[in-house]
Image 1 (cartoon, rainbow, N blue to C red):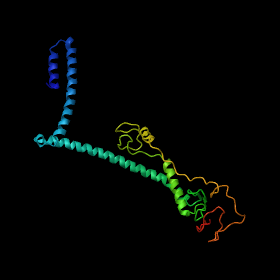
Image 2 (cartoon, rainbow, N blue to C red):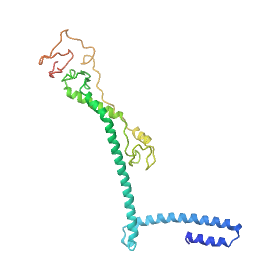
Image 3 (cartoon, one colour):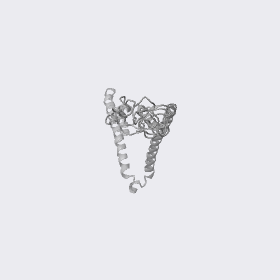
Image 4 (tube, rainbow, N blue to C red):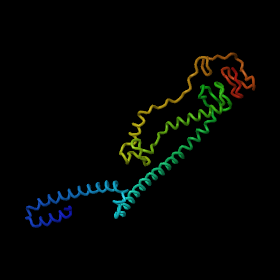
Length: 253
């Protein structure tokens, strides 16, 4: 007997019982309602399993095409909603990336402008002035020295900028901007990101070794004479500890 029919029967029977006995019928009707709810859940599970097992079987589909097609259309609509949600997340992330790029533009412009100023050669530690065409310590062209300095500055600034995850570190589902928790698995994004990075060793940044005794840039190199030496090729003044002329690049020692 169906739950609805059973409830009707119990109500009819309760109507013939004295009022003091109605509580017993109320308890029975509550049990019927609970059993009916459970039966509906089992029916849904059974229907879902049967659909998966028979969707491709022409024998089972015969006469039930509208039902199978309706279920397939519902599944397709669900997939479209998920894809649309992912597209919204991607669009929001692209917009946020553009906003970050616009905010970073002035700082990057300042870095580019600073590339033409005085700097320290990252290869040997020698000071390179704006007018120098070569490094006096290692002989590298000033353009190469300045390009390396700029690249290292950008790398340091990018490392100092915290990365914003676009997908959940635990389950990989797309994240909405500024999400604190993943709507798919419920994890805390910051905690999951920290846990993911815990096992990854950070690469040590390369640093130029300090010059040893007697090397260019060390404090124990004494002047050979009080006269200002000049480059034998172009005649420009050079320092005693210069290995190359910073004007023409001629090797001095």
